[in-house]
Image 1 (cartoon, rainbow, N blue to C red):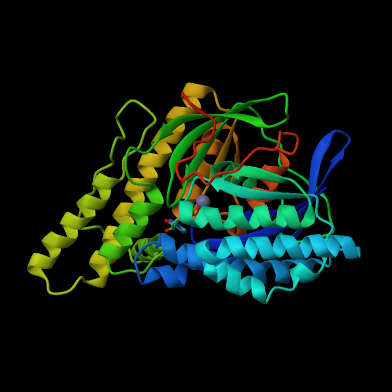
Image 2: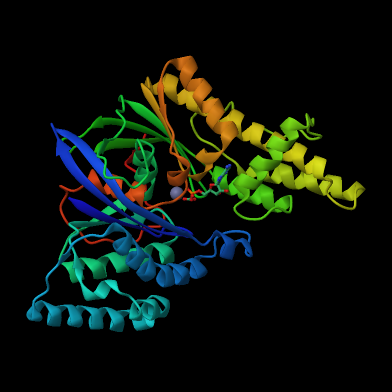
Length: 405
Ligand code: KG4
Ligand code: ZN
């Protein structure tokens, strides 16, 4: 089965193509191609993701990205009869009429597209339906709907957060002729999902009759997501978006230079007794620290910034790790998954690895390519839902993964 995946939930326009098969009853896949067009630089002028700009950019990016994906992957195309050709023309004209009011950027970009001239042998389209920015999600969903009609193949809707979970189980994200099995996950497992929009602890398991996992949200943030706290803190320190990597760089410099932070930040909700989080207070504490410092000094000194970045990263690490340990104890986790863009953070990765070692658990974290938003994880998560009934797909900004505990 060949699956094309589309991801447009935030500021990455991403497409991927994988092939799947069952080998001795086990799921296997082959990565054919995975492309990510990041809009981060464009959004950095706004200090965060600007939804209408993201929508426009996805419209511009998807057709050329699909052309590149199909050219790179050398897929065989179906021969199209004259009758089919007429049908295809009608579908294209219909979609163009729909788009003219809704998404002129996608319309413009479609005019130059090469993929309209043939039908590649693809069996399914997996697309992110939520959670994320609704105007951005709709671009991917509408594009998937169009391709589904054009190629007469079904769509599989995918929850973005499940993508972050399953993406961590991939052995290798490199395009290759080799087949690979997903890493074996002992159940129940606990996933810590940390991104720009989410901070969630999810219990995974048991496996359901369909072969998909059962998910239960066992903890979540009451306000800001941890990635959002990184981004807002970075902004307060005059660093550009996305803030996570910049904060991490300053914190590492502080460690190397043995700088002692001038400010002690809170560890929000560390003793709350439950598995929930809160990060808005942490950002406010950084705001006050910067304000107090600015009353005395004209500019923020580099070492003050380094110290504050270090203290911030330590506060986040302590809180996330303490809740992760609590979740392991409470749910008898046999394995850990860390997913989402913030899982690229080196300090956090080291801490979670140490925790897994102490508990004697397997830990799965995504490689760099699949730690941020990408379509490869959407293709893999989609592959777990191929047997489900076809249904209408609607963008859902606040879509939940499974049930809440
Ligand atoms: O999963 P993701 O790519 O997009 C969302 O679905 O939100 O996560 C993006 C978030 C941003 O807030 C970014 O600052 C953060 O991940 N991030 C990091 C690092 N790299 C990316 N945060 C901390 N340390 C990093 N190295
Ligand atoms: Zn994400």
